[in-house]
Image (cartoon, rainbow, N blue to C red; front, side):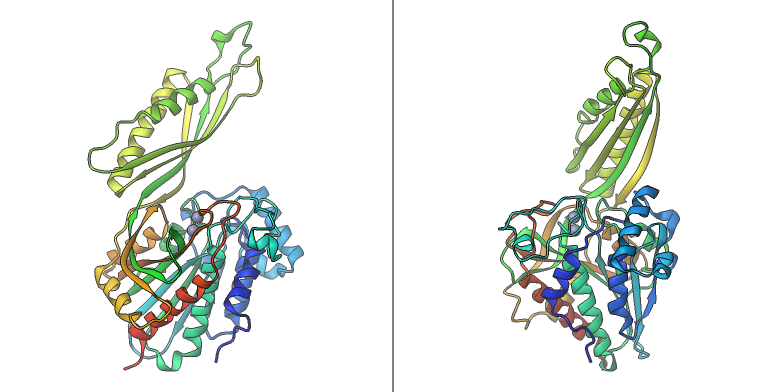
Length: 427
Ligand SMILES: [Zn+2]
Ligand SMILES: [Zn+2]
């Protein structure tokens, strides 16, 4: 028997209202937990979900205090907040059918973005009154739809466990944006003995609903890092020579980072996204902060960009006699989906009437920290794939007017159910 009383659209709209950025998903984690609690899963929270020390890009304590306070006002019990405190968010749910069979794992990311949602009446969440209640935060990537798909999949597996075999692990992962959370879940060991691993994304490609790709290509490996230059301030009129200028060090770094020679083996990217320096017009700047990312078509190409970037940054610091610190904020390797699993997905969904255009693969052209999970599954001789469920994007991902075409939720959940029935049915 199913336990979820809402339909897909109602649930997605409910989660849409309280987006929380990575590692502050306190309300989201609580709501996911409440739904799963009605089923027969063993549930894991807090330090049982992730390895704290393997997290990167963790927000500061003020962010935790603010988000936890908000969660308390929302009605999340204090005992629950205690279990997920300091950004140990996310839930893992496991279920053993008791019948020998494969270990099936699926991962759904749950975080929102630091974007203020559009209040334009033509933007459906605003017009139909389920717009974000959190100023400055928004589900602008569709992870509200991912949570919903994950919970409905969990419900289906639970309701049908008497006819299924093997074991199931469903991971609701925090902090996917800026590729920060997956590593800490991998390091906790959740992917170590998985036979079939599935994940995916709604949207990404601007194609009609009903298009599904069984696998994905073109994951870009990426490194995200902050750079902190520390120089020496001095009076800009009286003795500028006594200062060590951090602003100029950062500026020299920014220009030369963009001048790194491109690698002949494939495509690479670099972006200096932010730069802040100095404290006043007549003061030699004694600090500069930069937020930077590199990407590459392969892990090796990204590594090339990252190593060159380090050389440039150190040289710029030396030139202006600054100290410099590079702080890792996120990373993802490249990944390749298992050909056997792509074939298995295609076989599983071949009679699905909601799927009108079934493709082997579509390109992602972005970075996703799920690749850390896929890498671990493949290392341990399991199989992994990442599916795409496109819809016609009126606005791109991470735009204040991004919105899901909610009919894609039906496509995604029906594909997952077909896959479970095809790979995990008792003989
Ligand atoms: Zn995103
Ligand atoms: Zn996303």
